[in-house]
Amino acid sequence: MTSPPITVVGAGVFGLAAAFAMARRGARVTVIEARHVGAGSSGGHVGALAPHVPENWNEKKALQLASLLAARDFWAEVAAISGRDPGYARLGRLQPVPDAATADRLAHRIDQARLRWPEDCGMSLTDRPESALVPDSPTGLWLHDALTARLSPRAACAALAGALRALGARIIEGQHADPDLIEGPALWACGTPGLLRLNEDLGRKVGQGVKGQSALLAFAAPDSPQVFADGLHIVPHADGTTAIGSTSENNYDHDRPDDQVLTLIQRARAICPALRDAPVIETWAGLRPRAQSRAPILAPWPGRPGHLIANGGFKIGFGMAPLIADLAARALLEGDTDLPPLFALP
Ligand SMILES: Cc1cc2nc3c(=O)[nH]c(=O)nc-3n(C[C@H](O)[C@H](O)[C@H](O)COP(=O)(O)OP(=O)(O)OC[C@H]3O[C@@H](n4cnc5c(N)ncnc54)[C@H](O)[C@@H]3O)c2cc1C
Image 1 (cartoon, rainbow, N blue to C red):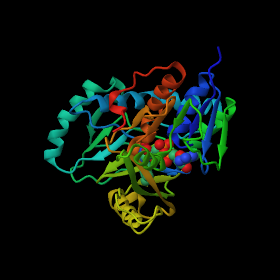
Image 2: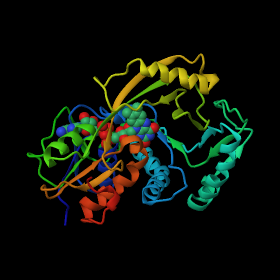
Image 3: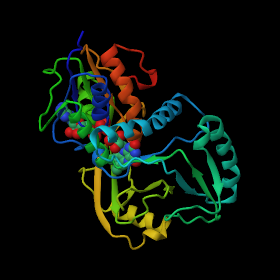
């Protein structure tokens, strides 16, 4: 028996990754995108695939860990099928240790990482980080973790689109899809516009967009771990660039970069003096889809049988994409409705 064709609405990382997982399983998939591939919040340049802290372990952290661990094989398969490099590499992360009290507290974090994370992905303190991009540390100590990875968001979306086409899927760009006119089975992965539509459709607040701004500098450290300091992600990429992210703005008049991104660049240069003279290639802004639950959403669309929603990636959409893709494929192709309650509609 052949399964019915599947429509995926939205060519951001959630829609593309889920479409890929379904096309890999032999499904006939059409992706409909209002603008172009990666036009929404997936079109930026940060791409940190960073774990939650291992203390106070819960279901959310366990699901994120499962997705981060699935990422290496997922992106390798995308690369092999598309012939394009998504820029994935698990090179770890450095965080400066600000004071002695924090260094003491980190012993517990390192223990918890040993308990919760795979053996080859642990945390440790170092006084000699091996990196071309070392953040200043007042204590001369850094926390290193071997679990954090990076990818290039734009390259990853392009690789997913290439893999989909190679698998025979169709991608229609420049077409706005209306849920009243699309027949299921369908996956709605529409980012912030999708959350606003759900607010309207369900008559309650499901989520909203949170603006984020980032910058891309010409600084080559392709084999170095990324940096997390003072709330900033500083992520060297394979192509000789280094991304800096991000602001987090609940109130905004427009979705373009503004002066706040200049402050971001100054802060990153203060954290990593090696970036002091690195030219700015580009600044960028996007609206992160944030659910009221602060967790990703993967749930049936109430009142629309055969329609599933994948949204709410917020700050970790790229990290969660492999897991969301696999669960969405199982739900739509195999009728597996046993989705994590954490991903229910808020
Ligand atoms: C500055 C910034 C930095 C970030 N850094 C990271 C990071 O380091 N690591 C990480 O994991 N995540 C990061 N994120 C978050 C991540 O980018 C998002 O979680 C992710 O992109 C969400 O993907 P999505 O596919 O759900 O939405 P989107 O990428 O927004 O895609 C939704 C798509 O649906 C289309 N669409 C909407 N409505 C319709 C319709 N009716 N018909 C057809 N098409 C439609 C839109 O045009 C859009 O292309 C960052 C976000 C920002 C803004």
